[in-house]
Image (cartoon, rainbow, N blue to C red; front, side, top):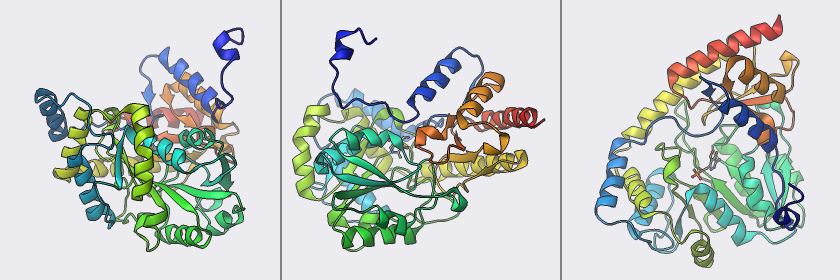
Length: 393
Ligand SMILES: Cc1ncc(COP(=O)(O)O)c(C=O)c1O
């Protein structure tokens, strides 16, 4: 490959992300096996609700096959503004403060484009969603990891965030609720807001898992805390809440000048989010929210089942209070997370990802994603149980 002219002349921006090598290896092996239970990716197995699909179909049949406004159709932006009022206690002007993007991923890319200069530091509590690393480093930003420990389920510690602050700190980036670690307590969100105000920092807050939250816990948007709206870029979208990952819709909500400045770059990257997907997202946000509650119930049952199964295997895990994932400690089995995932795949055909993909600072954890049909998850638990027993004996 190094002989290849394009490879020799590639830019310096392109760097290997944490854990990508092992992920590719696992996926390559999985592709050669039959009957693999895939519990690696964060892609809901549930179908997009029928009324949303029908809205997409109707959009195609009625000529919604063209470019839309760069920042999204005004109907969708209005629906997002109403959703933010209803769910997040936030007032956004749909004309000027909301941008529809191609997934939350593009929203993160734009958020970083808007705020990061070379040398700027972004504090990111870790383990983290490393897919966002590139959006930060691409513009010369530096990721600064705030320390956490597995002893208290990797809870974000405001004092550790404070310790990371230097003259170069520009922003704190959070995923709330998180991936691979679920819930961030509301008090911690309030503390993060306090730090941001005290040190004049921006907060980028990904809230894509806001509805995947259990035990009656209420989600708190950092922008809704007094003094925060003006310094927060909120990222969100229907991918997880409505099982719409493949439709590729997301959005960011931010102060008007930021949205205005990002309009042209957004046009350059994608022109707009596909019109058909925007019509489907409109149905998601304006239609009945029963589907969100029904899906949450299914995810809740899966997390209860899998938590018990891991407990029975004698494995400890971060208490899953939100999100789709069980971040599970496999160190007691005397193998690294990479080895665990490779052997589990080869010997029992269950695909999960090692914590390295999420910059696990302990090198002890694997991430189990509960996004396969429930009967397959039950079968995966049986296979894991057998594997763990074999390793222990
Ligand atoms: C924290 C987080 N943000 C964003 C995304 C991707 O969102 P979208 O499908 O809207 O691009 C994921 C996908 O796993 C995620 O875990």
